[in-house]
View 1 (cartoon, rainbow, N blue to C red):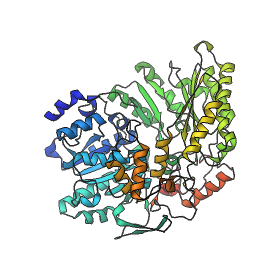
View 2: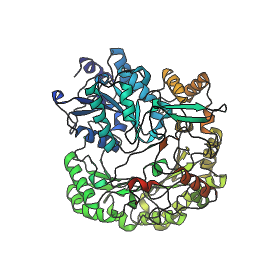
View 3: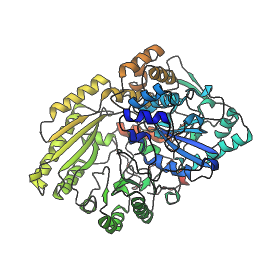
View 4: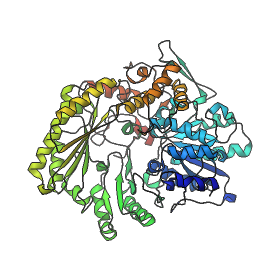
Length: 610
């Protein structure tokens, strides 16, 4: 261990974040390694170690001969101050070596509020933040993750983007970079070659021009780059890597359990949900393999809880059979099965009896809207009776807590829709009084609301976010309408949701704003302790840009979007059609009922695994 680190650790919170050495962490002989990859998560250890995608790609890269992938997380403020004071650069956990010496620096970016942390981590490592300043082949700075379906706000800082699921494209990219180094290519030569790999977007190979009104005029590919880059996916989930020998963290993390991925994609088509669109098409992992992975993961880690994870886990066809198959193992090893959230229209007594046996803590449902009219607009395809029947089942089975998630500011929302949330919570309370098997324990009903953020590649990508003042008025309206003492109301901070909308819909000019905000002190802006909207507003003013232009403006259907060079596989024509159906209040059936022609089936040769 670096002597400087030894001196620093006693002075910081949670020093275990920074020492590595965890059980199942990969250590390799440096003499047998020709490619070192710093796999960076632009948030704290607790958040990054809870990310299943990062664990998967960590295993994929370390399974390559001659490649050593090591983890890097953003330090908390106290640690960063100590490191800068000691002149200690950002380092990887496995070897303790500074990441500026690595061949590839790869960021996993799932959330737009992590953008400032990317710049801060590069700077803390001693790596120039601008791609143009990094003239050599190493370190190559790349990024992937859900937030990269619009990478334009960080286009100046990254060399290339890996779009979609990384199991296959990561291997291809690493091998190409290895070849480029061996053969002495220039960085430009490598980037041109990388742009020919399906799923790789190289920002510097695209020229963007703007109209006088600030909208995008043209996106011009250069030097043979493709006009549109389509995401990569794993075709067969049974052949994709799963990390059964998962790292056991040395300090508590957010998701401190086995996360068992049952399938990818979602059959539902909620019109606000970016993940539901960009992870299409649906691909299931077999029941037998899921059961095997659950057992191997518990054996390899010692965990006693398995979360059955996917975008809509209760839509996994053999879910009940999988729970039955794992029952004996779970009983013998005292392992609990849990679901992070449930569909209110397919929760059953059979399913409830198989989940978290002996732990009747609480269940989570996400109706998203307070009235049926608005649920139809967003294509939630869940009725009030669906939710109440699920609550009856849960309360009769011994559960005494329900969490309900909603959004405020959805397109077409009225005060009646907002008040409908309070009415629905009251009906859940009444259902408990009617159905609870044990009223002595009381009941806890939690209503949580977030502020709708219109995201790229969704049916609502053209819609505005309501103003901050209007959002706060609706929060106050709902708060006053919730009269029952057993109902707790939590709402999401408005400042961060506003900036999230700005960044999500931003163009390349946002790079200057992002850099300015970072130089003013923005870094861990996903955390309330570090976030300041005033700092961002100052940056916008200095850069001559208006954040409301990005967040609060309705975009015409024929406007060129900043992310139009990126394709999730879902066609723009389908998104437009879904938007029209939304404003007509017409629902679209789920993919299992019939194919709605979104286009994603072409990624798997014409047939989704629904």
